[in-house]
Image 1: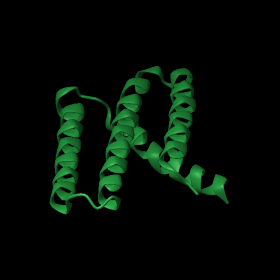
Image 2: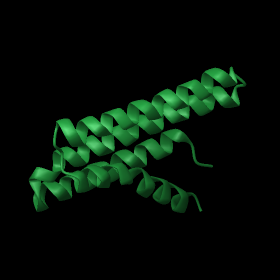
Image 3: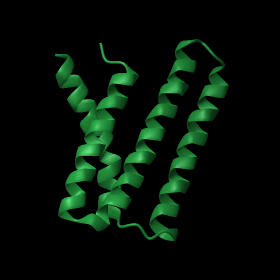
Length: 111
């Protein structure tokens, strides 16, 4: 069975290895990559907490409100990263995609 802690550790490994590789291949892309990876990691942790509330039968309205607020904050932060900080989009979105790689690795590892 896959738990959130396993996926978080795999995410840490994927991000670390990719960041080290980027450092040697194209150092300016490391910072936007880490921003994207940190954003998706925090998003995943918050999503796990919200689902824990749903499964523990907490208030449905509160849970839905938290999901909507969480995604609104995600969009605002992405806007700030791209428009205000002028981070390159490709390494930023590669960082965001690291969670998909972590899910894949965690799933394959369990089988």
